[in-house]
Image (cartoon, rainbow, N blue to C red; front, side, top):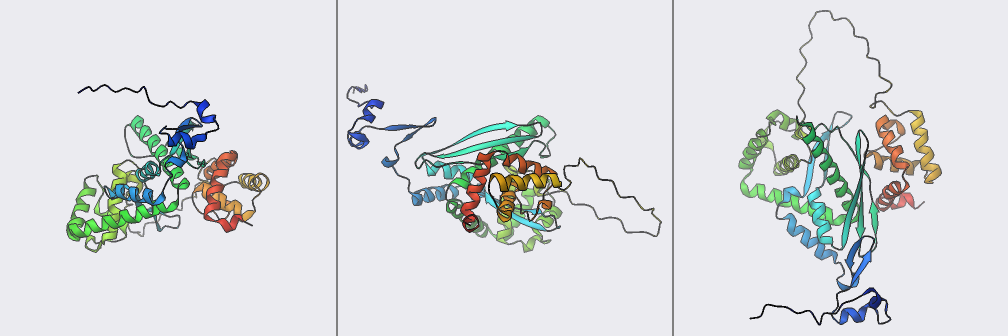
Length: 366
């Protein structure tokens, strides 16, 4: 049997043919594969295979079923008031799954750096609709992930920042339901697996797993807020499983999620202790509160350049600082500097405004 293949009859479509009056419909109907050049990317003509979100969602869920722990992260962090706050979201793995199944899209990224920070600027391009979205992410180099090899630690810090930047821009650009539905399904699957394995066996396995990375029972008690493993529910174990997966994939360090527990202070004695003078604050301390000059610069930019009222300005600043801001006094000097840097770049700022206006439409429709 002759295995040779001949392509003498294959139709070749040139740019000149595409411009002819017969149009693309006739070319496609005739069996030709037509491509379109857009920016630096080449994409199939959208009408050939239009995107169907239900199919996209089903494909993402089918991938989540393979490893639900890799789809989302959930852990607790200390708040300024001394309490704990649960943080939850989709991982870079879930973002890539959504982008892959969303199809006909691309993520391009540019990177700048200063002596102290990396600035990642990913751009999401929906080649089917022409929608483009950019969201800048700042990653400090001194992440403190607890590694002795400084070069290796810096490499991991860079990868963490890049992954977070891509994750954020994908989740911001695609319909939120794709991410939210996938996370709920992942949580359900993990709890179901724990129940099938047996709650007691799962508790024992959890303790052994964390002991292998030097996380003590006391740290787990502090993290969960429950001092008896026998009272850990399936939901608590699910959160611990995702926390371990986050550490195992270098998305966060042990130190970040399970900080060392401070030893209790010794009991007071009758021995006289001379009063200690309060330590003078260093005026250059980056953790000090924002200055009036910085506050004025932020308000000036928001009102004069972006035409925002006070409430809109604080909403924008909260998004950039990544925590609620009721007044400029809620910012540190370092955070205020970052906000000002972002406001100096109109494209980046407009990206934040676009995302905010989608979530808080009434606020920006005034």
